[in-house]
Image 1: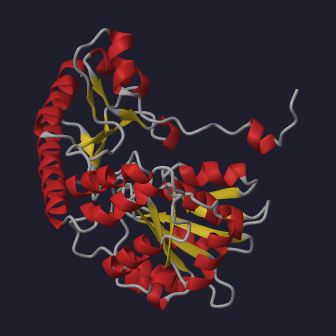
Image 2: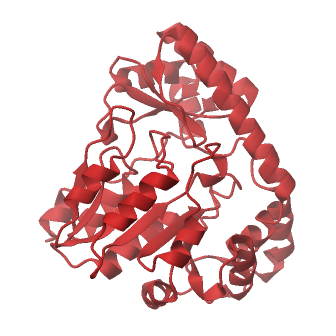
Length: 363
């Protein structure tokens, strides 16, 4: 038998949302609505699609490993110097790199219960411990509890803002107080994972890019998978002080972001019309979900993402199976310690209606 560490032997891999094609084959369905993976129901930015088409004839060339054009574009987009930026094969790769670079085996990362599960998976694979603090009663990160857990051995703190799967967020005031509470000597790195930030409607959401400029130990992660609809191309962005960027660039694989992904990202962030439309579709969908879930008497939480978390009060695996039979794919979140909860992504109006009607029928 191949010998591996206990951490790898006991590691439970990330399980993605069930694919549409598999569901259709398994259940003999002609139509399936997938609202499980927080994808953009509008598809990708049209400008990104056109840019990819134009780049297809260059597939025999290696990508730009230094991201020159992408760095210049995102530098203007985020209003930071190019040396504050690097990129990954989705933000997941950047999470993995940060843990590998800044944590020794036996040290710890700190996050919250029901935070994005990739933190724990990447930490365990690197033989790094995960310390979790409980959520508040409102399904929110408890930054005061996290502050009390900062100790020797905690090298990285992950704050998903907004958080997946809860949709809740940390306010600017809460984050500022938390950062001020950290040790002044050798503070841990604080990673603000903002995959869903473009969907935020809250007025008191932090301006994280300016926070990075003021705090050398703060890192911001963003993605083009969500609001810009480039999930298949995998483009994650890191904004951090140049010293952090330098270490990440030393360790990341060359050509980790392919050429098509780079040109698509450059085009996507210039597509202001698409961004506005995607936000509008999402916010209208969320308001529809809130209204319908309230009528059904299902507890749910206001979301700053492109999904809503609901509590069915039933075993989520059983509910998931019954919904699949109705041709609707939602996401059970048992792996986050929420055994009766489901995460429902916002789709197009027809998809949202189908999901609600399936829930009504099953429940």
